[in-house]
Length: 254
Ligand code: PGA
Image (cartoon, rainbow, N blue to C red; front, top):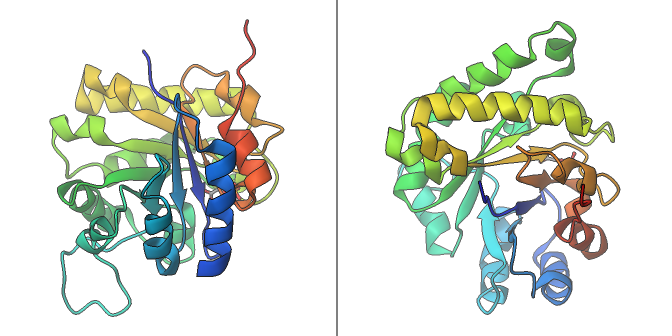
């Protein structure tokens, strides 16, 4: 099933506007010509407008890291889906583990954000992943399936294929401990089966990204796995050198 690889950089709470623009300038040179894969850059909210302008003559795609589910209202400090779309944002990360575990986001709230993003024309990058104690207790499958069911319960069957899903084991995020390609593939296959159960055969087209200490050194092996369709990259997306190499992954011919 020809799924176009998608490489997304999650810049988290890094980069001022000036720093963001300096990085984008370099990325346009190093990966601006890449056409056979999709590249999404997710700067902090404060840099979205400037980065959007700089990407206007590029096919690099603008993403955001979070949003509120409501269109507008008295929600101090929040950003609506429409506000993102208005800036040229096309993808939005939802349910990232840092949102879940540092800021207390729950499946219920995330499940409202998913249809809200779609309604605004944004592609959700919907994140799931287990904590180390859950893996050690043999609960990885339950946790991941529970997050899928809990977060994707409010969209129709037809909307399923518009999603991007990211599997990010919490123990691998920012720790340098990447899941092995086999560990990741096993969970990606589980996710794929559940997506097909929920949304039908069109779910074969959903890209499932791996995230958690993705680096130039491990991207090629990860991308060799059949159900790994791309990567959500944190730390290694902050420099042009490492992110470009990740975007230019090479799958060994077997
Ligand atoms: P990392 O972060 O690549 O720094 O581990 C990934 C993520 O949180 O999306």
